[in-house]
Image (tube, rainbow, N blue to C red; front, side):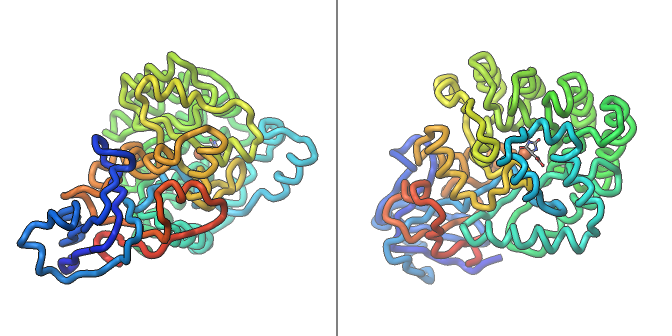
Length: 400
Ligand code: DI6
Ligand code: FE
């Protein structure tokens, strides 16, 4: 529990809908107590009972909700720099995957690491996120593809949340790739589903994810994983329509998924289905950029249908070795034509929704006091700069 504190002399981009752009409040104050936001508003409206609280002036700086990266694979072994070179020499991502490179090569590197090795590498990546104002990170399994390694990855993810001031939300991604030499259906039944049960029994799973793609699993196979998730009472999400259109987005919507991620190849009907289901579209411009994809997600269709759009790094060693959420926001604007306000909503309010978290993502009374304080004059600057980190300080659960 934190002592009461009144932040003053600040501009608050509350990201709450209904007000003006960014939910902006100039000349604002934010009262924090017990790790939560007690009050936010224009300082001239400060309730009398808060006036005597200890104050901290932020000298006119911008305050936003702490950022949320709702899609990462940041626990993994090894790296794929060699594959990067191969792609530059002309090899395709799917071609490399079919030849035993790609995801499966990271699986070998991840299986070879013990918990300490995975943790050490992951903490470096997490610290870089924290340094740019991130307060919540989703972390997936999916580079184990066997019982022990899938659970090891998730244990490491949980450890990160204990060792660092950051909330970690886990996703079980056993249905990420078919291990070399195995049949996809037998892998799902004999390895993936039992590993999911075991991971859930250990309290390691917050949601269940899958990769629905020609080089991974089809909709019928993913549906079996989702049925098991449902039986266990776990929410689902899906890598859908990243490289081709095979129906993952519609499937995700049918299961009331928290999010459908990538969605470059989604169409108008998919947008309508996501809107109807309240499923968030998670845009991952790092993978689009790395793979030199040319089909951008249907952002205008999402807007028109009223689909909430989140933005995440997809940090992984293959398709998106991107360790900066601010850069993902910049890329979402330049590559996908999001507005800077949509990009910030995509890493705050909508990212929280993509993780099923109702207690964060805005600066609003009653929510967690997870805040980022920036040395910028306007919120658009957060998405505008490339490779610059203007974070002044971060407040996590009321603690600076
Ligand atoms: N889509 C992605 O972009 C990552 N996983 C997935 O299903 C890529 C993972 C990798 O290339 O290692
Ligand atoms: Fe991914």
